[in-house]
Image 1 (cartoon, rainbow, N blue to C red):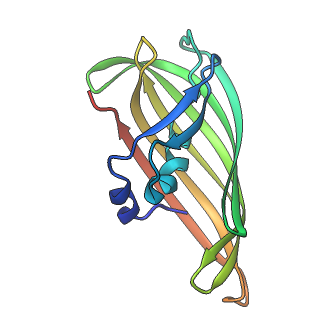
Image 2: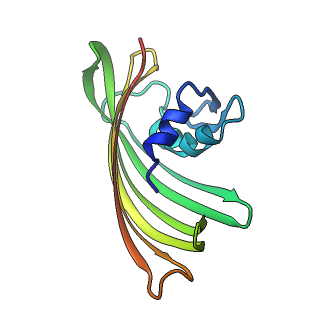
Length: 176
């Protein structure tokens, strides 16, 4: 589901800690201090940071599969994502030398989520792509990411499943 602007504003200034394995795969991203808004953007941040392998060179490619379940009370939603990455080209991002890493992915969503009208069942699929920029010393510099999802939501509030299409576009620029 898209993240409302008010949530993003409430999460402003939140800090996160995580780990990057020797393989370059990030994991365990968590807010440093309790902040309900930060928890809501945690998935977006996790999705946007690419799996960057040490010693990448143009032409390298790799794949990754992730599954994340967000649970609140009796409700939970699982998002599964299959990504194909490629070190595509030397590039410049914010006037800095970089390696452009591309990602193509598919995703599936399934679970239940609370609504004002009772529990809702959410199911669907999505696809997207991204370009991420990494400095020669391995620092993440930012990038562009987009996805389109086709979901259906059902529950006691509707006689038939309600179709929903979500288009999300994100640009990240690391502070200098």
